[in-house]
Image (cartoon, rainbow over all chains, first blue to last red; front, side, top):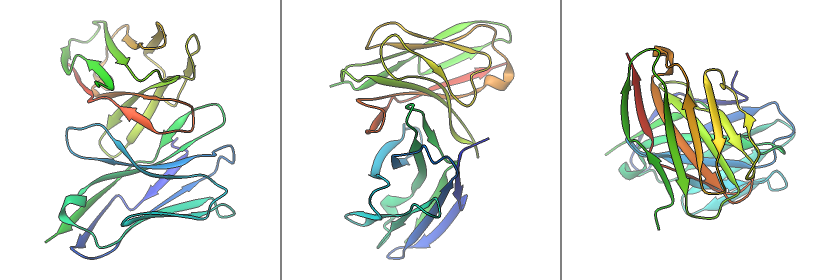
Length: 111
Length: 112
């Protein structure tokens, strides 16, 4: 049973639009929340990460929002570009070092 | 700088055969991980090693064994392959448990 639940499974957004991916967790031992981006045939690569003492982190067009009390966090991709078409995974690490992933969201950005 | 190197890239096994997937990192990282990726399931943790000499089970360890040979290398062994182990396997490493993990290119394994 996956400890990090991710939605939606897929989404289609027009160029210039906003993509939003949501994740939820139950394990309060999680203390590091990264997002990974994966292109076909490649391994995942870190996109952006947040720690639970921060409610928001922005890097360029990518923003993580974190709600510790609700045990939820989300990724916002602003001004989506065709090059952003990929699969995105949320993840979480607990105090024992287990890095666990959500099921992934396939994002397609149409021209 | 090679990063995380996995071998082989592709493998076809017959049911019941055994094999070892190799992983090596050249970043002097402490933590290493093995994942399998299946459609709609994301990346599921098989085993991980927080430091040299330690290993621990992840979400789906049944049918697998691991060895943290030294700080650089973390191998995954299938003793008796089953069709349910058909998957793409990824090795990853990170300096510490809550820092960026770097992934290899993956091994596509088919068990027939």
